[in-house]
Image (cartoon, rainbow, N blue to C red):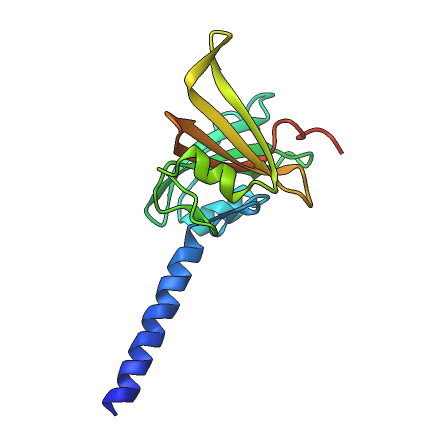
Amino acid sequence: MKKIFLLFFLATITTITHAQKNDYLVSYDGIGALKLGLSKAELEKLLKINITLRHIGVDEVYVETIKAKYLGADVSLHLFRSEEKVAILEGVSTSSPLCKTADGIGTGTDQSTIINKFENDLLIIHPDYEEDKPNSNQITITLAGINDYRSGITFTLVNKKVISIKVAPTPEFRDRE
């Protein structure tokens, strides 16, 4: 009986650990259950919050960023006004160490690890700019989807270490078909 209980306990712990990792999994689709394309109403239900839009639907602005908590992780929700004039999730970003790619890339990962891990993928690497001058301490690496080049995971690095991750359409290909 003790052996059966022990096996059941280990199986339960393994299942819970796997589910928790998926809750924070960064992919081309989003972060965990925060999938790109979710409507404002779906986000409110998922996050159990009321989202008040200050720009979309109020004036001619088509984008809005909302700060929120997703299972304890701080996230920024980047909303976009669709053709139907509904706010949808176009991007999500975070600096939380809980959120990582399936390969384990997350906050604190160094630049060489990203390049080595994704050497066969499309990487767009460029410095960030301050007042039209490159910032030598900060770069951006965008991992663009091979099957759908519009989707991307962007890593912002300072001193060659990841400080934030954003999942959104790649800016380089956003409006191209």
